[in-house]
Length: 377
Image 1 (tube, rainbow, N blue to C red):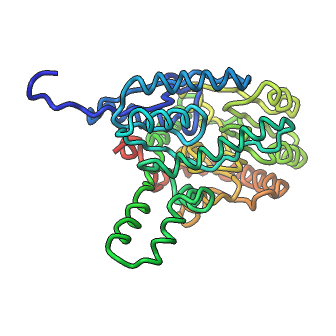
Image 2 (cartoon, rainbow, N blue to C red):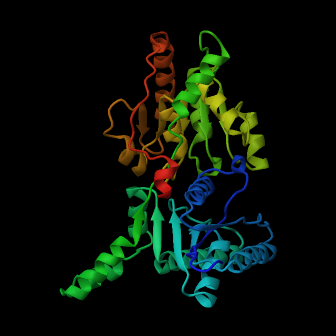
Image 3 (cartoon, rainbow, N blue to C red):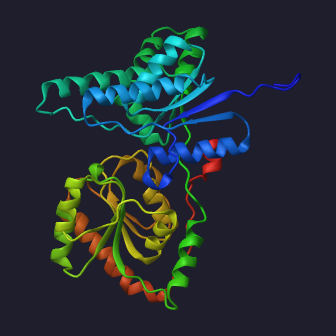
């Protein structure tokens, strides 16, 4: 470094995916925010990928340890970790032990319970230990970055971040305790999630390029991680009873075992697709269905709404927070668990779309959802 030159702080993004096609949700957040901050030049951005873990537990622990050691070796001043995964927990422990001055920021999207009902007693115990360490990592972090008020509520009610200390502080009314209480509250920062605001123009531009009349050939589109979905099979079975010729296209992660089941149900699952292919599917689809059981934000839902698509989803707290009181937002929130009602509302939404398609009332909606540059700031 030349004399007089200001040394940049090193900001580590742990779990940065080099190929965004194969990732959604938290990984997408990590990539977009890291790229925006790097472009701004405000930090020396360090990007560390995580190698895939193994299903074999001992091998998995070794891989996670290697991932964390690799990140530790980069000597960051600030480290952004995700709240999910053993690699993040190991890196948190290593940073606190060997580089305690590093500021640790943990990104929390939503609570996702680990499988505790395993027949393997050791696996169940392991899951319980990891859950405990996750809670301690969240409570110990310098800052928690979360994506919505709903996520913050989960931090308070499920993980008890700051709650116990705040309750104890209420018993002592003095300036010092008030300052400490404020710092505990301020430690959780709602930064949100961004989307590409130009997706409306991309989708409608693509729609026009496909055919002169903008014909659509996909009744229902669904994007997401199927492990988080609730009642998809029952919903699709009911939809087919009401409308036997209906079709559904899905994209996202899927295990090989689940893939066979999905295909037998007559669902066209495309796996991971490029951004261009996703835009093409948005332009061809009529209704977006999203039976996810847990979301901190729901990027796919926001994208679908920005692409001017009607949406049917479970009534999750975050969707009520973001869309319930917004005029012009075409989203139907279904009482959780009522698969028959979800199917009926999906068909009703499709029928309404087919009746009104000739009006071409395709206006860009306005939602209080930032772009990625704003989130990074």
